[in-house]
Image 1 (spheres, rainbow, N blue to C red):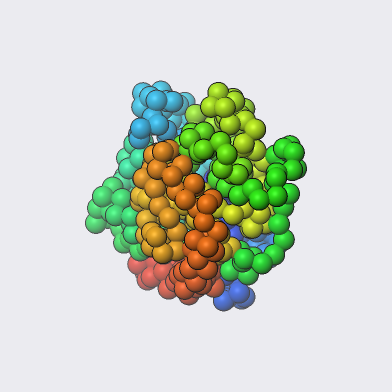
Image 2 (cartoon, rainbow, N blue to C red):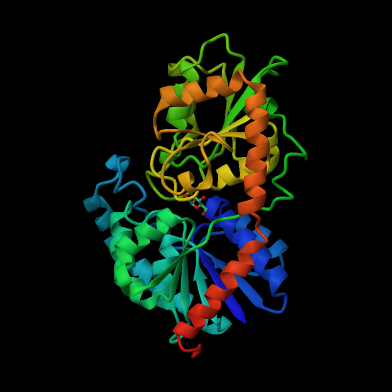
Length: 411
Ligand code: GLC
């Protein structure tokens, strides 16, 4: 069997990390299969996939297509770009899109895959446009579609050309069904993590040095938010929560992550967050490390991992990873993230965007090492039971066969 994976981004965000885990899992289960990854921009994803023995191709997006995105056009963060401006941009990038589909089709015809697996919104649409006759397409959807008005419309239009949609949670599955209706089969498959890499024991990092802070006092409790700088990941809520903590509480905060995406208007600049920390009076209480590739080591260097997304989180890979590392986790209780945790048992929860509630949870955990240890142990047990990445191939391979049956094995 030959499978081609399509990703718009070449950076290592959650969806791309998941893709790497899936590639590793499928390769281990089916060493005889040919796997190829085609990416719209160069980046670490290509390198890491190549190290796994996956064939790789970069087919660069034209500039306008790379910058195009409607992540901010639907939801409450939609002030950044109006729908009109977005449609204008779509129109402007259309000639580039048509030319790109032509080049993508040539690449697909040349590889002659049995299945096309697309891993990002733009590739879902471009992939079905470029698909050679009879080759089934599987959309792996990692984010809510309805939050992206233009993409929702495009996906509804294209759904008939996709064989199976795989989602990372039940919550995203419901969202896709609401958009695409009966046009396509939808299966949910939870993300997973490498439990050996994301483990309580292992290397750590000097987060203070990475953030350019002086070493913290010995009994300091370290609390970190690990995320891309997408606006909805809740950096502002986290900084506000830190500013609400009693000054005497020995807590230091860390913002671990950098700007990853080329899409306009969808992410913070690190400088803006630093400025906000100064305005809130917490500049000496919080460090900014920028992007850190060894996220497991970063998590092991923290006592508490905060997930603070202000909009429903489709899955929240960082939550599963932090649980696997045996950390005490505070998650934002909404969307797919709520499906991952049993609040109070293996993690704590706070309502999305509620800085005072998040501050209360941080203070509760900072003052109770036993509770942190108990949640950490329970989190690891949950991760072992539900998020072991070796199950990915076992779940995905039958879906590839299902997609082939749907297309009548004509590819
Ligand atoms: C996207 C989602 C995130 C999920 C990741 C992997 O980045 O926003 O919730 O964990 O994909 O599926």
